[in-house]
Length: 144
Image 1 (tube, rainbow, N blue to C red):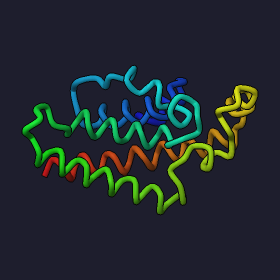
Image 2: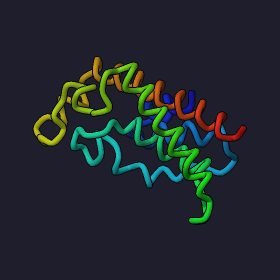
Image 3: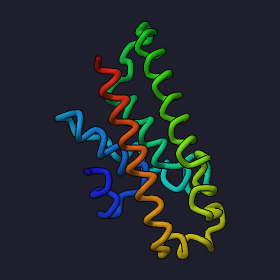
Image 4: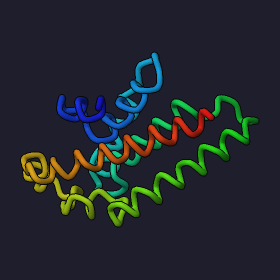
């Protein structure tokens, strides 16, 4: 999947999911730079998993509203996001990067170990895959 390829190239979790989902559903390239600050649990704070925020960004980019009076679109996308969050939480027990990875990314001294940990990279690859799959399913459902 494209999200996995992007992550392997060095994009963070949020950039990878956004790029992968958008590539699968649009001819227009994803604006990866808007996802940069979401990696590592939003600015490397260990908060909400970047794969999850990337999925939310992809849903908004592909199916979000373009005018404030599009209240039905807003409601449908919001409901879809709530479902995505619930499904991810059911699968992994949490939405937070620190709990998922076991690293406190707010401590700069941890970052080299985080980057080099191959087991953590495998975990994050699974989070990316799951978030991209959930987002792709939601994009398809919202198109119906």
